[in-house]
Image (tube, rainbow, N blue to C red; front, side, top):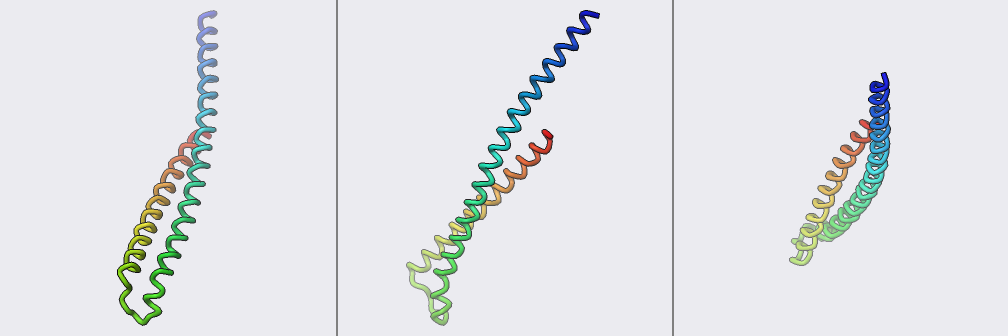
Amino acid sequence: MEDSFKVLEEKIRKAADRLRNLGSENQSLKSELARAQSGLQEAQRKAEAAEKRREAAERPHRETGGHHPGAEDAREVESLTREVKGLRREREELRARIARLVETLEGLE
């Protein structure tokens, strides 16, 4: 009987340790989630700003009746287009990371 009680005590100690570890992991994941959400918001702001700059760079071309933009304008539009695409890709990566973090957190609850 004494041995079975010791086994039970050991199992309870292990369970308590595991709960502490999971709590710590949960806090860590919540912090990472907050950072990722902040990064996502920043990426969205950058993407919107880059999109507006791209549209502004294209606007003179449309307003001049379709005249071809100069080489400098074309380079700027191309640069802004690449920036927008990169920021959109970053935003999607952050969304995927956040989804994985939320799944992990939901699994801990």
